[in-house]
Length: 94
Image (cartoon, rainbow, N blue to C red; front, side, top):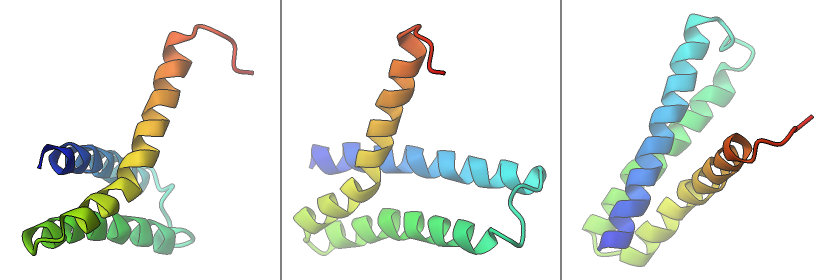
């Protein structure tokens, strides 16, 4: 199923970006005791989406797997389009 693979790759890319922000936050101390619970929740949710969708697909629940991948893929694509628009529009955003 090509749709699932495309959505899962988008999810994996989004997970890498989230993980990168987490690691950079650990290095510059912006991830602290005050917000570590929120970060852990986000990281666990992304892991559940990635591995849960694979498990659902392996057990034959293809539609449920696609829906689960859409939970992360849709906001990632929308945000990516927004960033692309901001870069290419050459207009002032202030």
